[in-house]
Length: 639
Image (cartoon, rainbow, N blue to C red):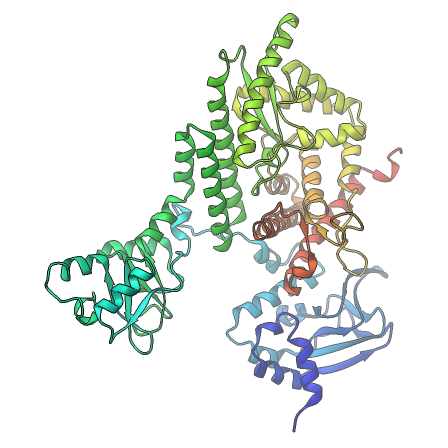
């Protein structure tokens, strides 16, 4: 007899992680054990401090508020909506409830017995990974749990010399095959039709028995040793050498060298006794090794034309995709792509200089600003740059500036051809406003700091994130010294930067719903840059300025440095660093998937698991903004 209630429960669960990762039979077994709980508004499901029971929970309908009681004051920590799970932490940590769960409105909740769930999810690592994420999301003290660190941790093999070697090798997923009963003529025709230089001989179970290459046909057929209609078994090289689906580039290369082969059969379990799933060739290895940072940088250095630089940047895009697919640490990815972007700019300048009528009249420094200045530009975005040149006599100023404006036009044009769009706001060195002498730049920075206004705060938030790409380091150092000298004379500037840093509140509304764009072309889309990344960027910049920290522009590195010098806020700063890295990775993957900047996200395209991970990243934003509000006494800021 069918259990209609269990089937209805199963139908709901299967649409939400982690239950969508289980097969139907196991899911139905869990559903049969689920306790269905009806709650009126205000009813308490479990109380803070109580012993945990053997269930965790999922909201079927309504909303459950999770609150924390501190000195008789109730603080809403989070709100769980339909499809959200909660109450996981006590089961994993084996501790009492840290929060109180109560119905925010009339609600139906499923109580899921952990023992039944464990039995069904046994050996399913993806399910447990999801539960750990939920564990961290529902933890009140999100910055001290070991699991929080595990979610955002970056992993890099300790024995890695070249990260390319540790990528999982790309191989042909649909190899050309022939039956063991085929003739060589049939096999050769198939090779010709598919325009490929090899064919794998398989048995009825699709296990690889041998491989035939163009060389085999040339050496054994063209020489008359065997006729063209001979059996493939007379020609094939056997047994084949095999590898598993997770074979790294380095291991694949070693196998080929060891056995003096150019083709490696990839099988289901890595042995000749399982189904063929692909073929790795020496061409795959060469592509992987040729598309690594060292090779790309060499190509950039040797480039004599912008077209060659564009080709190198396209290879960097492929490298970026591969790194993300292989789960290479975002810290490593950022450093590699930033190095390539800087090298492209340097070479663009070197190519532009011979086009000028004379060598530069004085020393100069080319600065990257904004995201490239912070070494965070992973996707193709618009270019932001500036140029500073040595002081010259007043009579020579315009002539000197015109020279560098002309040089900058050549460079920005090349960068545009490479793929970096012109800045819509014209914040480029080809604009006379951003191509000045060192004295003019010093005066500009002092004006922004000592006479702060809305525009000054906006511009300084862009231009203070600069890094020298080419030219005189001394000029860049002078700019940095000027900033900190001027900051000694102005406390108001810090306050205005702080106000700007908290202008975009937490990306989640009261009911933990994402705050999306209300109108315009991006209506109903989520702006991950403005609502997620920039609040963390702005807060980090402000805090390092107050601490007079020089030479660290990258946002996650700024937070890591702050964690060192403010141990009492170490956990908060580390959580901000982790969140920034996770959001950067999310935006980059989204941008690559949709071939855009990744700035706007259609939430309907995300799974519940992805939404959960995003929400987890937003908690540090709220905490760091609260810290800034208190530290800079923003409520007293004059309007």
